[in-house]
Amino acid sequence: MSDEAGAGEPLSDHQKREIAVWFLSNAPAGEIHYVAKDVRALLGDDAVYEAAAAEAFPEYNKAHLVSLELPDRSGDIIISTYGELDKNNYLDPRTAQVTTVDHIKQTCTKLRPAADEELPSAYIEEFRSALDVELSKYVAEAYPKGVCAVYCTNGKDIEGPGANFGFAVVISAAKRSPQNFCNGSWRSFWTMEFNYELQFIEIKGKIQVDAHYFEEGNVQLDTNIDRKDSTIMQSPGDCAVSITNIIRHHESEYLSSLEESYMKLSDATFKDLRRKLPVTRTLFPWHNTLAFSLTRDLAKELALGK
Image 1 (cartoon, rainbow, N blue to C red):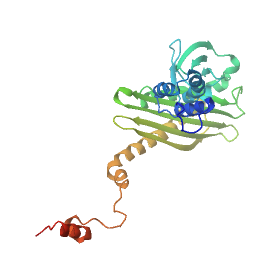
Image 2 (cartoon, helix red, strand yellow; image 1 turned 180 degrees about the vertical axis):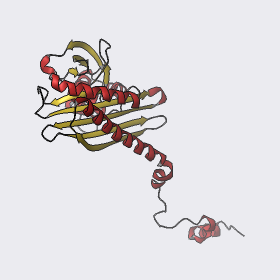
Image 3 (tube, rainbow, N blue to C red; image 1 turned 180 degrees about the horizontal axis):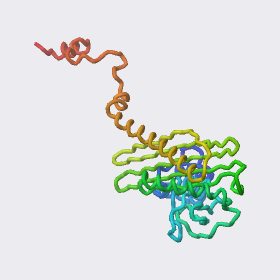
Image 4 (cartoon, helix red, strand yellow; image 1 turned 120 degrees about the horizontal axis):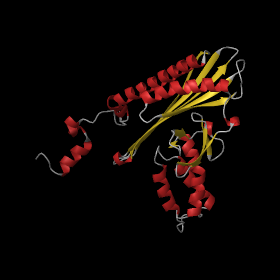
């Protein structure tokens, strides 16, 4: 990002940082470190780069549900807004631990037991852990190397029946194969609002799929869909099974629709990208080019056909 003479006003450090943040934040799934290397080289200013990286990496990690191995290797933690205690500390509800994250290196550096005030009550934890168990079974079956987490988003201090509470589920699965010029990710976010008075659970979800193929080209898929559903409030175990089945249904349905779309690419989508007729709305008469005056004039000038 050098300031060439005659190229307009030089960019300020603030403008350079904003541009760098945009490129880093919009890096394809699993490719932010490749983008960061190029951005750093283009900036030629470590201070500006480090300021941009400090802003972009945490947001990127949360948006992409990046999963990191815990320091004690007891499992993986998903970096998400639901587990964020502060900028660098995240709760893993499954192991009831808090880890410190180095966002730029994408590693966990420290680990401590979660404090009582950071965890849900025993009553809420019964519902949360039951859902976590069922959801983990589904993710293990459906997604190679997939990870999931269940967070309590409201009502975590409720000690017994009689009040409303809410959960959030995140599912993250990634395929990294840069040596084969492709990367991709599946991310889904689900929220559950438990209404005790109506004995009703409202479920909302968003599924996001990204894929990037860059062998001798640059093709990206970035698609998402919102879903809604509901079920009745039951025992913790029955609620867990019902919610997991709903999530399984909607995610399987969306995956099938994507596969169907790919099957139609060659027969329909690619053909629709091409103009069926020229702007004259008339097919070119290759079988009778003499119908055009230009052809007749050229033939006359060159004395063709004599």
